[in-house]
Amino acid sequence: MKMTLESTPTDELARFAAEFSYGDLPASIRDFARHWLLDSLACALAGDLGDETAKYADFARAVGGAGEATIIGSPERLSLLGASLLNAYQITAVTVCDTYVPAHVHISPEIIPPALAVAERDGLDGRALLTAVAIGAEVAVRVAAGIDYSIAGPRGWHFPGIVGPFGAAAAVGHLRGLTPLQMRNAFGLAGSQSAGTWASWGTPAVKFHQSRGAGSGLLAGLLAEQDFISSAEILAHPDGGVFAAYSDGGKPQAVVADLGKGFELEQISLRLWPGGTPLQPTLTAVFNLIAAERPPFDAIEHVRIEVAPDVYEAHARFAEPEGKFEALLSYPFIVASVLRDGRFWLDSLHPSQVGDPDLNRFMRERIELVANADLDRERSRIEVVLAQGQTIAARADAAKGTPGNPAELADLRAKYERCVAGRLGDADAAELLDLLIHVDELDDLSRLFKLLGAAHQRRAA
Image (cartoon, rainbow, N blue to C red):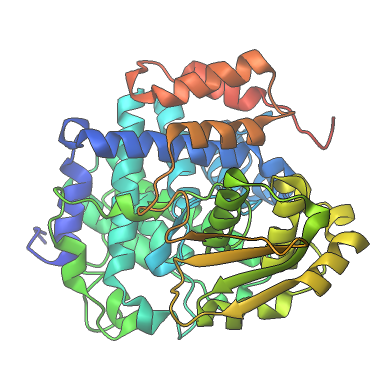
């Protein structure tokens, strides 16, 4: 039976993923893709601090086995599947990776690890890698945009394991030179593995959704390369297509509108600090406040944190957090930490910090979290009243790192340095940073992979 491409959403997305080239990427998208790759690998280099990372490494070894792909932060090498699973988990392990806010989905854990594994095995250059991850990101967010989150979200669907396989399949398929028809089959196979619900929220299983999305996309791309046939229209098919299954038909036009000319991947946000995505505007506001005038901590009488009503409803219960997970969702804890220490990073979440009686007393007696109907999820305001009666305030209308307030390279350098501190020596850290900033100028990626594998485990140290 002869199979041909038509003009369905899946067909058009397959043509884009198979045929788009480095030369087709606008300069701004190349810049964003470099920054996104840098940020993602910085997150992975912080991944050894994740509470479950060691357990997940044992799992990846068991299902993946030894092979030729670099494990970030380890001299060990696993199969393409094992490396994709483990490196994906490391990117998301400590809750500082990217977010496509319209669908509440992290994108980098699913796409970058399988692309790295295939690029390393096949000896590809930096241009090929950068093009593949950009294509994978665009495919993932296009599929996410096509699923109506206003319907899918309230039904409990968690998007990393749903759209991630499509992005990973696109990246892997592009690196392997799949034809448009093979790419369509890859998407059909990706959609066959799409799954994940919010019932896992609050557990490490949400991170498994992301890691599994990377593995699923890898399998889809490699199986499609064997001309394995799958659904011809996995997205818009009325009987079991992704859009119908998850959101009553979705928005197919969002998949193809201005495809290859306008780039939805630019809507991906990069988190500069640990903490849930809704907390990033408040973190931005409090850092803006102390940058302008840092008040003495012992002179603070009252702190008022203003957030959108729906954010308040979701987070008010974490006024006195117990453990790291609740601390990452606690507005009082994060703001109190920044006001006291002038910083907020992963070490701020140590049990001695989360359980600090003085900090908890300050949170309980002096911090007020309130709902402000004039704010949405992207905005936050903080007001600090001092003992002398002076009031200082700051507002963020977009979190730093979002499309409305983009992260600069200097911001990402600072985050990278925090992520690699204690993992790489100064010279190796500086060299790796330079390679990532200029990745598409590299004809040979072997040094980059060597440095990624040279990082040592902080816990062991």
